Structures are given as C-alpha cells and as structure tokens.
Amino acid sequence: MKLFLMLVMLTLPIVGSTFGFTVKEPPTSNTWASALIEQKAQASGVGFVSNNQQYKLILGGLAVKENTGNSVGLSLGHSSSLTSVTMPREAFEDAGTALWQGEKGAFKLFINDNRAAVLDASVDNTDRDYYQIAYNSKTKAIAIICGNIIVTYDDTFSTEMITQTFSIQLVDHFPDMNVAIFSVPSWVDIFATTDQINQSGMVVAAEIEVLENAAVPL
Image (cartoon, rainbow, N blue to C red; front, side, top):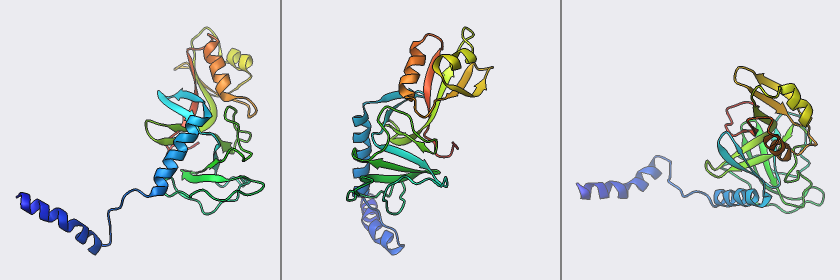
C-alpha cells in the first residue's frame, strides 16, 4: 500500500502537466508585497481597534474608488490584484514612486514612497473619493478606512450633544441599539477625534469604521 502511494505521488507532476496545470510556489512578488505592506503598517506608528480586530494604518497607503472620474496623480501601469502585484518602479519627478498597487472590490489600492505627496500618517483623507488604508496582521488583509466613527452610547448624552461637542456629523442612527455613526470632516484627524470621544466619558465606546470585506459596499 505504501509503495502504491509513493508511486501516485511521483506521478502527480506528470499528470498535472498533461492536463495543463502545475503546482507552483507562491511568486516572489507576493512575498515582497506582503513584506512591504507589513513594513509600512509598522512605520506609520498608528494603530486602532475596529470590530474587535487590530489594525495599523499603512504609511503612504491610499484607496481610490473606481469610476469616480478622479485621478490619483501617479504614473502607474496596468492595475493588479492583491495576488498579482507590480514591483517597484522608477521615480517620476512630480508624482513620486508607486511602490505597490492592487485592487479590493471597487477600489484601487496604492502604496507610495515617502517622497510622494499623499496622505499624512495621522490625518483623514482630503477627498471622500480617496481613503486611507490599514492592515490587519491577523487576517493578513487590507481594510479601507471609511472616514466614519461608530459610537455606542447610553442615555446620559444625546447624539446631538456628541455632534456639537466634537464637530462631527450624524450620518446613521440605531436608537434601539444605542449606536450612532458619525462622519468626520476631511481636514480632521480621525484617529485623534476617536481617542477624544473615548476619553470624554460621554460614550460607552467609539471606533473607526473600516471595510475589510470587499463584498460589503461602501
């Protein structure tokens, strides 16, 4: 029986080649991309928790919603998926270097070098068609920072009081659950604002909303 199993294992590559498929090691570019993403997440120095998951902001990371008519101002080649990435390219005088690009659902993802004029590590996006991105080291996935803060509150302070105190806008409300979703102005540091809300004593909890599941629309 053991001899039979050994013969089967030895003939698998031959059968695979005959039917047009081969078993390959993960491409080097994937390994390189994973290392780059993790390195940029560490380099940002910004971490946060959302939906019981730990995230780190990706330094120089950017998500652009497709079909918005906006240009990211970068000189890039063909779009690639998260499993088929582009390697580093030479710097362009005005735009800097796109170190990596990929896709997640309806979004194109980019990581730029530090010389490119993209988002600061601690501030929110400057245009709602553009989003910051974060890395979940547990799931090895990239999440899109939506620009919203999810707040769980009690009956002590109303949503109106929370809105006025922190200069944020109520965009959705679930009063039966004591949960409200607030948007943050594009010029406001969403990480600092979330910390301020949590430390204020006015709410039960506040966390930054992220989109990690590409099947969920934003």
